[in-house]
Image (cartoon, rainbow, N blue to C red; front, top):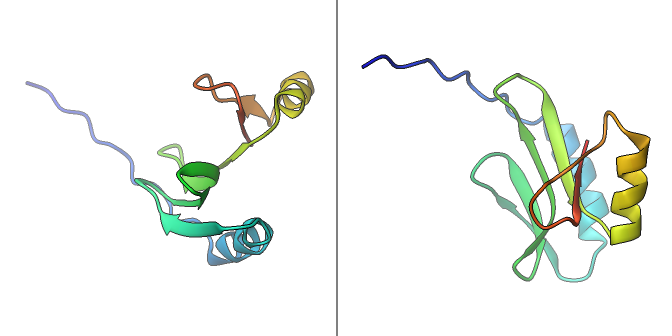
Length: 92
């Protein structure tokens, strides 16, 4: 059986975490926590933002948006992309 090496994911720069913490912390009852990879901010059980490093060494920020905003980001194209699950998340 052959296995392939998985690239390490880079740590998100502390300044990014601090900045996102300021933005998300302004939301009522929003709290930060470690995610399966990276860091996420939640209100209740809903994730409103998630930042992480990918195996390709690029960083991603995924955030919840209203449907009209999701459609606007989809129209903008790269570097924005839609999360195919749920339909209310956008990545950059």
